[in-house]
Image 1 (cartoon, rainbow, N blue to C red):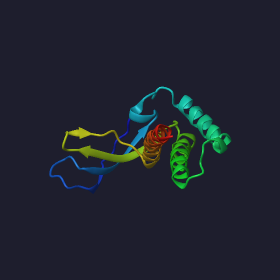
Image 2: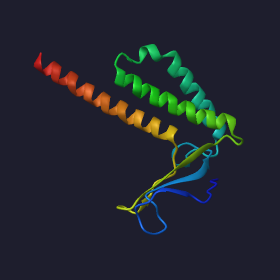
Image 3: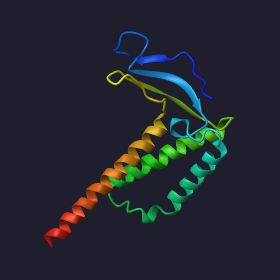
Length: 144
């Protein structure tokens, strides 16, 4: 499934074959960690549906604050970036190229791309913001 070529070492502070950060080339027909690799067409359709839904329901997403707009933009932009890869590549795959090795725990993190990072950071930010808002609302109710 994966095509890996000779990695280009971008930043290496470790001695030996494992670099902390490598720029490499891997194609991935699936989602994160190559999940659903057997269904790239379904993932393409799901990304299209998600983008259309985000566009149609954006006015209901409470995007009044700037940080909410950045979160929405990261998720929508990451989804669009991976969708463009899937539409214009044959077979429908995304190109992953950021390879991170975590030497402290001896773990080679799965290769990912910038779009994946945007989706992940947007989703985590959304969760953190929701928890923060829930705590703020709960504290406000207990004072009143």
